[in-house]
Amino acid sequence: MAWDVAIIGCGVTKFGHHWDKDHDDLLVEAVHEALRDANVDLKDVDAVWCGTFYPFTGVSGNVFSDSLKFFGKPITRVENYCATGMDVVRNACFAIMSGAYDIVIAAGVEKLMDTGGRGIPLVEGIFSVGMPYISAPGIFALAANRAFKEWKWTREDLALVAVKNHYNGARHPKAHFRREVTVEEVLRAPIVAYPLGVYDCSAVSDGAAAVILTRPEIAKKLGCDYALIKSIGMAVETMHPWHRPSETFLSFPATVKAAKMAYKMAGIENPRRQLNFGIVHDCFTITELINYQDMQLCKPGEGAKLIRDGVTTIHGEFPINPDGGLKSFGHPIAASGVRMIVELAKQVLGRAEGLQVKGAEAGFAHNLGGPYSVASVAIVAKP
Image 1: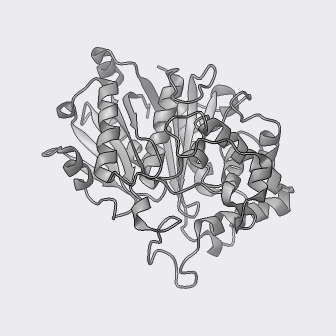
Image 2: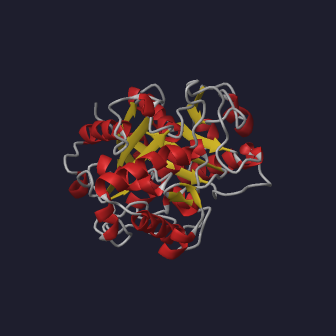
């Protein structure tokens, strides 16, 4: 199936600690920014998909309806671990492609800081009784330790990811963290789950993001400057990878499969040549390096070489996370994937809010959820 869904409006709040705002405030801000960008009114919207991972942020379509005073039309709440945001966009795209609706909104919001915890809140009962709870840093530390053993990667390699992403994020007005760091700072930081230190882990944030979607012919009639979603691939694997004998912890199978789907749909055979840049789910620095490999930018074991050689810096051959990624923005779960789609659209339209990728005409975004169990990959390009 050919994908050509137009993104005509983009809205993103500043990500960070919003003690003076609730989820309603954040969602209203992001949606109205997107509506202004598209030059359409809320009454022109036919349907909405809105993501929240945590029920304390909001449940059902009412998470959107009551915030925006948008009543009497279809609103669907989406949840799919940390890949919720991109799944929101994926579902909204299907509605446009089917012809069921002309203009829709895909949005994600999360209000996490009010819970009082320092990490992502615990969700009771989702893991087995044999392993009732494992922390996110603990899950990804398994991958880091395996990579260190098999490929001789080092903590310095991971530090280079943090340095790159914080350099980029320091130049984005909506990033949570806007300060550069050095390799020495990263290596000196306290260990969270060996070998991952504080600067190897993305932070918890509040935030919201929204996109307005339609068909290209409608975008042209409206006179909108638009980007095109060419494909979105998605795959779901087990939520208990440590119980699976085939698990190597050197690759995330859901990412591999989602990437293959997205590339096939968009006619991409060599992403490093046919695309100009990428955005990966860098919840941890080790995740970014493994994502390079799973997204077919290099062979297994070569991810660290890409960061050492500067290939993925803003001035490199294939920039990754020009916005600063989750390392700089933090990770308000359902908002992150939608924000990635916004960044893709703004980059290919030449109006990035932070650093602009030179010659950006097409790029990918990758959203990963749970214990590497859900992945989504989107391709966005200039018309």
